[in-house]
Length: 437
Image (cartoon, rainbow, N blue to C red; front, side):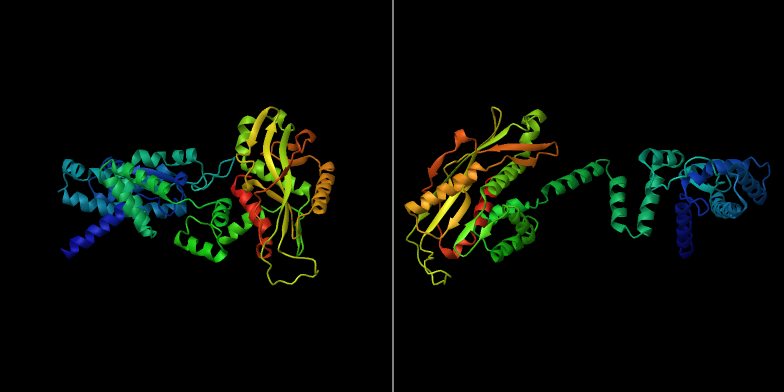
């Protein structure tokens, strides 16, 4: 029994090895595939019953068929020697009866053996490796192998090759989908697709920022929330990068004042708005219309007093955090000719207010007049904003048409104490980003 077991393993190893090109034929284009049935036919055409003469005749015919070089002839003799040992064993088991031999070894006879053949240096492009070839070239290179070898043999050889290279799980999967029900492969594929669909999608930095601002979360609180669902929430560095994109340029901050130029705030608003609705431009705005965009806006200011005074020292004795005065701008709509590209759903809501200036000062007539004069001067110098829409062309968006400038009081603007004033500008920008601006 022990002898038979080792012999079976040796036969299995030989069967598996012969389905691959020998070392002398490292690429399929440099190998000649011959089935064992064809080799047996050549043996029987020798005209002699002596097995040694038959195999000498077979060796000469294969060398003639492959036109191999001297170094490759050694590989041919090794392959034929292995085939000879296996053939003699199977021929003896069949009691040297032709019909019995062919019926018992049908699958074995259908397997192809790769013999090295002469590598002819032809003119033209150098031959590309199999891994680097295109799908069409791979099909051509494997056509002879596929035609001469049954699918079951190719599948089994692939399983053994995967195992020998350490890919045991891949070998098991291949065995399950090929040796069981024909529907098993489609079930595997459907299950894999469903697993991809069920995988949680990670939020973008803007969406995570909206959660952080909407929930008024600190960094520590956000990290705790993210720890419960790391696949859903990006890292805080991603959120911080998205938050920095919400800041307009040239923001100036002192201990009692935070201000941004009107032109910079308008440019930033236009840029962020177009990024949010870029899909609308692809479907509703033609190239000829890209220089006919106009953004309608309004602006105003308001003050709030009676806040608690915190024990925080100011450089000037007149400065106090008990009152705050805020100037804001609100985008109303973006229009292309007569088409409304974007419309503010809540023009009176503080959600869309974009702060121009935040100052610790009590509201008065003088302060209001000075602020109106300052903003009017900036309006006179407003220039068209320029940005890129889907890499198509540079756009010029007209700002503040004189006929649609509206002055308004903003009684609903939220006022804060000094301890929160430093973060007001960040929160307003982040809230605006959360509201698709």
